[in-house]
Length: 495
View 1 (cartoon, rainbow, N blue to C red):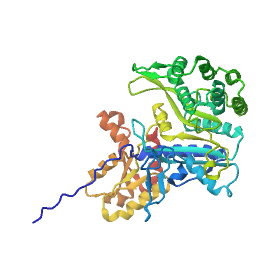
View 2 (view 1 turned 90 degrees about the vertical axis):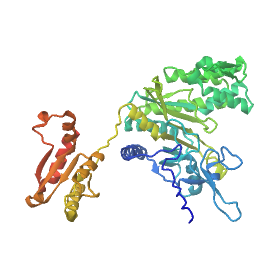
View 3 (view 1 turned 90 degrees about the horizontal axis):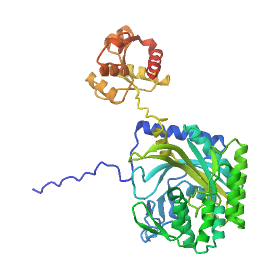
């Protein structure tokens, strides 16, 4: 007789770089998205929901390799008898799908087209602590307007959104810069080599970490990093380095001073002057709307994918301090960013279409609120109606329906009702605040037994009945008073 083969069962584990979200976590994210959507809607933006899958051509080939058109995304090729089916990929952000939608439906959309979108995105990158391959984004974009008033409006809306979800004024700042200003600086430096320009941009991005002296060294011959390793520099002359340093250190306490320094940094550059003019216009518009420098500020150190953006760029930074994994204090950092990208739709139509937008990292924003103590997981469960007689399920269903119609979260126990102890254990596992009991005696007398599970837990913790003698953890009520008494008890527990 042949030996029976052992069944190979799959391992029950979350794929690397992904995670599962349970009850209260999902509820919190849903609540936050609802609040953010409310702000976006109040600003006149319209909801858009696109497919999670796009063609690779629509997403753009940003890191091509031999086997897959897009490294960095989850991509696959559709089966085709000629083996030349389309390559598809999970969206890696919400902006590329917007560009496709606008190009596809541009004749039917109002211009400018103002939309917001929320949902998960996927990136096939190496996961790390707090870095997942699937995460939520929350975007708002204006397509078809070249006015910097659109950029200013996005910044104002971002500030309002942060405050709406619970980030207090003074705990955040929206920082603004402009790609054109930096182009002016590069022009003054006389750099024409694209690789050298890219190296300068990467160095500018390190300003917050290494400071002015570190930037000077990295733009010049190089420097030793904290580990003692030597990092080769860009190799610029001292004369070439000065415009970069002047640009990065141009921020003053007041907007007027910052703009004056930026004009000095870009010299005679026409493109640079246009960028400073745009920043000045944005500052005036924001001031008119009541957004002062404590909320939104011009900051030349902001560098966000400057090869992608074509004008203003902005970033929302949370300024309060948290402790890192080693117990060191540091500011929380960025939770949102965006800017003007006038070339994205052009990939589809061949025509430049002005666009500007912002993306909020929902998971980071939720984490920030938790660390600040402004968001706690509400793990309270439903009121549980216990089952004393399985033949009377219709009676119990009537009770739970009455509670639900009154807006009270509740459920009937649907497990094996043979053991009443197991029903109470289930209620404890659900973190239920109340259990409702109706046996034969209660049915005959038209009453219900109400078990206060919150109070019962407190009594168990203190091991004394003295302080609770005037408030029993289980009591009887008339059946007709069900909703009124349950609401009153829930309100008392909440206090």
